[in-house]
Length: 292
Image 1 (spheres, rainbow, N blue to C red):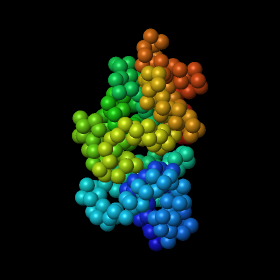
Image 2: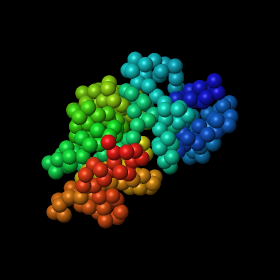
Image 3: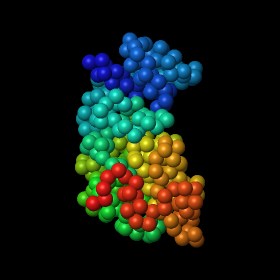
Image 4: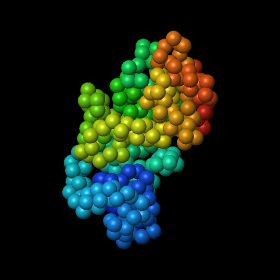
């Protein structure tokens, strides 16, 4: 009962303004010690600024959790909290884990061996060929792919995984009632029906630009390692790779022509110590199981 009450608080906090992941986790820690804390005391425990404290307190009293739960049920959206047994252990270990994850699909996929695969929104034919070469062996060995449902490599990862009969997880930067980009609406629905779509954002939250670096930390944080297929310098893929490195995860990179701007980032990663990937075995040998 105590855990259930705290999880109800977490659901409430996930819809409040003025607090981010770190503040939410601080509040959860305070609630574990004392479930009777008021909204004002929670704000104090999270060390909110005056502006954020005001936004938090104003939104806290307006939220109607039971009405919100009916909306989620109608849209077949579920959630897990950081206290839930299904919450991924690897994600708990990052610097700023989300206190709550919203999802559609099979939450049990989080218990599998997860590999993040990222690349540019404008991938080249070389990037597609790389996926065609690597994915079949990865899927054969029950690796679940994780990506961000963006244009380019992300979309290709999800689609090719599905075609190969594998399982895939999409992490998005908006509420699960949004599809971004819109042309991936059907793909997002398919993943939600037969695989898994995750977000830390509640329904009604639009895909704002600053959400995507935050989403990238989840992609890297969920996974045992991150494979960068192609990357330009200063790209989002390199941000995800650096987040993986910061969390002590393996980073894999595919080398490419020195004349291609889309290989500059991956070649640089290899020079800095990322594992050079020429075959799927280069990835599989880092996972703790026998190659089939």
